[in-house]
Length: 287
Image (cartoon, rainbow, N blue to C red; front, side):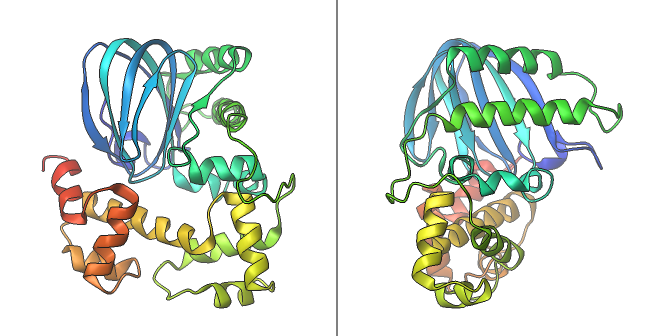
């Protein structure tokens, strides 16, 4: 069940959305990965363990993990779960518009750390379960082209939409139903150049809004402030390099924009509750 690397999940040149069905009757050890994973519980029960704490799962529960997040299952009782694997580039390319929706944008960037357990209502769960049952384990659309990828993307959107309904209204108090283009532009700038020594003033200037306004818009739309978003991106990139390369920890920190090793370790631990060295030891395949 442990899928760690993108190459283990997505065939070369294949559209990066894949689903698998699992039945678990015993604990699974904590593991990490370098892609987005959503898990939909359709039967049984278990305790989900992450850096953010533990949560009891039952039918209708949804978990979402971003690249670098680690998790495991305890006390599994006939747990039946669909794992949906999504390459991060899906939300920078094919479904880039998702981040312009404040509900979906916040889901993508705060799920698993917001304190709001995700669930699907019974009607949405039936739709998602039917769709996943039809697509999980089928030949990948990279080798069987046609509408298969569109179907998988549709199921993913249904899953995201149903899960987003779980989240409360914007914690910053700025209720909005439309995204602002400055937020999307700012997020893209950060994603494209994580090494740069960004600050809020420079970022706001680059997208032609005031720093205070950008911070307010960004938090309302994506659930976190711009510099926290950047820190998360750096931590995700660092986690992938820790798993996939033999580079020294200090070198990895420099590659993602953290030039002080002590600061890099503190920031990485903030997001994943482990030091970079401990993360590599625990989650690198064969480590």
